[in-house]
Image (cartoon, rainbow, N blue to C red; front, side, top):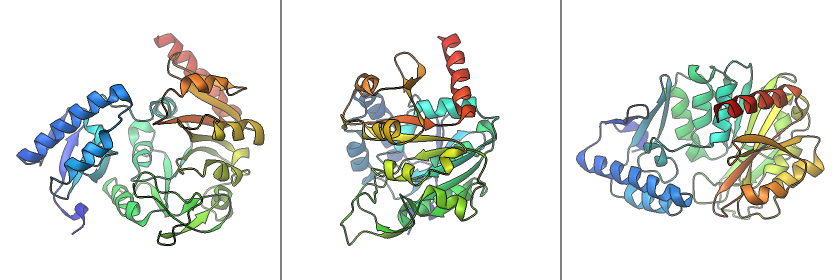
Length: 322
């Protein structure tokens, strides 16, 4: 029976309250919290594997995290990727969270590409983050079931689209074994799930989004970032800001190099040491920022005066809080 049909465990991140769990599940939750705190000193190395081992010892059911007053995010209990949220000190993609919170009042649509279970769509569509329109785009049918459940749990307030994002419309096959790392990049796995591929500009062509407007485009597309950007040239001419992963094990900074050399977009990265968003005109600062080869780092890219101004305003606020 699918996990989401079982009774739920509930966890409130604001209070730390855990309800609906049996004694063993409570002990597992304590172990997960401790593991996240300790492994955070080492970029969470080893955490996923340990959490997934613990997952085999508990009933197959979901946990519902209350992220804020009207945002609930569900996933399988003890999932190696998402259970870090049981640690209330854990910050997920903190630079994106900063930008989105600071722009709660801006009128934008989130394009959540590679949405996985829909964390950002749940948050951005909540009142705390401005009740924005969000389209959660996910290629994996397995992930889609949990993503769709999260849309339902949150009142159906964001749209779910079953597709991969790439350079052009077509078909591809998914590869990978981890739900957070499925990819269509160079897949030769004939046993992998066949998925529909859309270019970002196809979202305009198909009437899913307007040809003008403000957009936050989260590209968590596992190795297809440059192809996805190449397929979004019309979208890039709107007030759009793209958020892409730079892999820590890539010394060539492939995604950022493509943005600088092959697009008209301005490249921006968050420097955690300075606690500022910095515009990059060369790639050398990434050598210091990408401090660990085992994790991903994120960069922003935009040609929009609106978003560049919003980043400048946010930098001023961050400087004032230091």
